[in-house]
Image 1: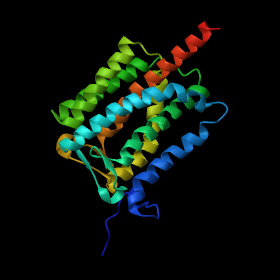
Image 2: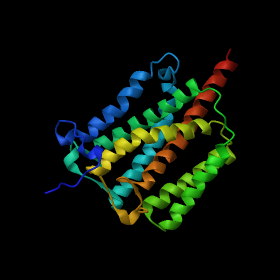
Image 3: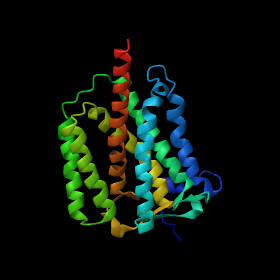
Image 4: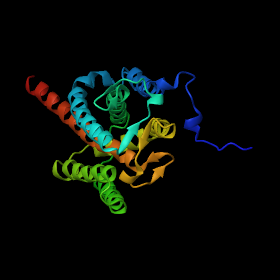
Length: 247
């Protein structure tokens, strides 16, 4: 009798109580970026003060969004893989997610700026236009589905605002950081959706999955990064300007 083959990330258990699954994923996601934040060339720890407010602001908005979608049945959490402590519909691990993942993403962005200081911005608008086109196609394929429409509509509006109105000059680093972050994200979200820790209602998404991960998840992450990175960069620029003006 043959046994169905499961994805690799499904087979990777952590040798502990399944209730620690989400916690272990968060620790693994944070450990590397946190330790490497003291690398002399990146020295990301010096930027913590610039990252603090953007992370809290955008995470607070995402948490409200998360709570609303949980109540609406867009997704739900499997208590088997959770510690069991919930606040306003969300497990405590989910609140940690909105601190750990943004930190790791911002760290990747800072590394790119430190190690590739002259990365060209010639293709920013082309890349932005491509993301907008993908968003419009996804919305057309899944009309009026909550996860699809909120994610891609907000992403379109955000890119238009930061790229074409504010004329941000850092999106080459943002997009490359996002592409790099897709690698660890695919593992983390793969575990979350394969076990599953997080169960999606496919009537509220476009029903396209990369492995076990809903297509929207990748752009949900990009939307967060667009706002967090731009606000972080804005805070840092304002701080450097004040420092220069004060001599």
